[in-house]
Image 1 (cartoon, one colour):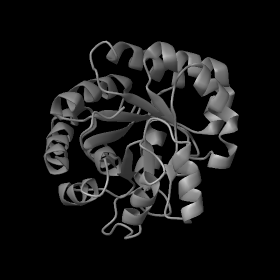
Image 2 (cartoon, rainbow, N blue to C red; image 1 turned 90 degrees about the vertical axis):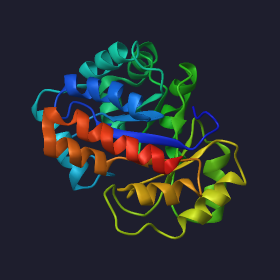
Image 3 (cartoon, helix red, strand yellow; image 1 turned 30 degrees about the vertical axis):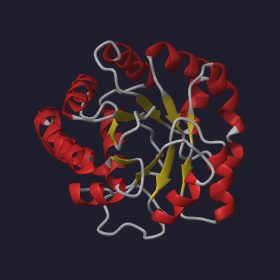
Length: 250
């Protein structure tokens, strides 16, 4: 999924402020330097998310965003962009949609991986077979924790390894857990899969620092906050920020 370079992965909430803007954002962010985009499927109980992304999910649901509409949008935008597109979602929406149907539709639309933050690694068997059958990587998340757990998750990782900088929910932070450098180093002892750091990266300086100890960074809440501020006029300010982040990542 990565191209042997420091990668910038951007998270946006699908359907915030509307589906058309989400589509335009993906195209514009690729042009601005984003190496991959995570598209959050809005959900009423996004347990891994802080208040910024929770509010974005509420706005997207209120304007009628559905999984079907997002999949349809991805199929359209896939014809215009080359970068990997990843869905971030939760177990409940996948079960309601139907596991096999969801993965089949993801495959047909051109999705390159899924992240399911409320599914513990030990329970990945809930989706692993379906993901494998449609050749869609099930991307694992790993937090500052024991070396044994890091090794276990890293050895079976797919796509890229999402290294969570801090315990808790997503959001912009003034400081990143110092243990994250150890997490990345320990993970890379057990896998050749790229390791990207997410949760809490809110400016170019932090992105630069985190990219220096990993294979890439994931920026979400800071982007979603810009979308919240500008609404349908968010394209220009978001892409300017993405350019700044890409320059910092290198």
